[in-house]
Length: 95
Image 1 (cartoon, rainbow, N blue to C red):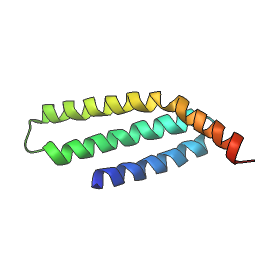
Image 2 (image 1 turned 180 degrees about the vertical axis):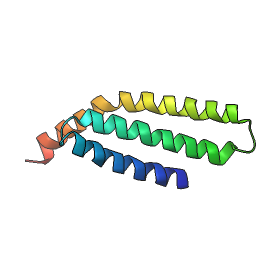
Image 3 (image 1 turned 30 degrees about the horizontal axis):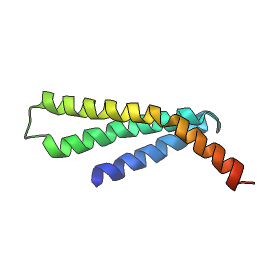
Image 4 (image 1 turned 180 degrees about the horizontal axis):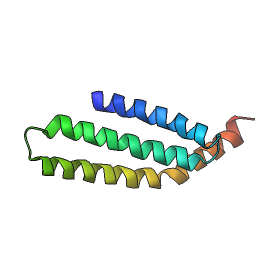
């Protein structure tokens, strides 16, 4: 739970940082960069909490990298759905 909370805090802070940098444009930058970086934090914390001291550090590093790469792929693939959700919200809810 600690890893999740820290990663979510990092994600929100980075999302707002990128929003300032892009002046509210380029949703894909905010969505992808904030999620990809925060998922790296999440992967490192979860794997570190579970396996540091019980597995060789090289194995722990491989687990972190593999988990993070999987999460990066999913974050990249969810971008079209993020845009579709924003479009639907603006079209049907926010009038």
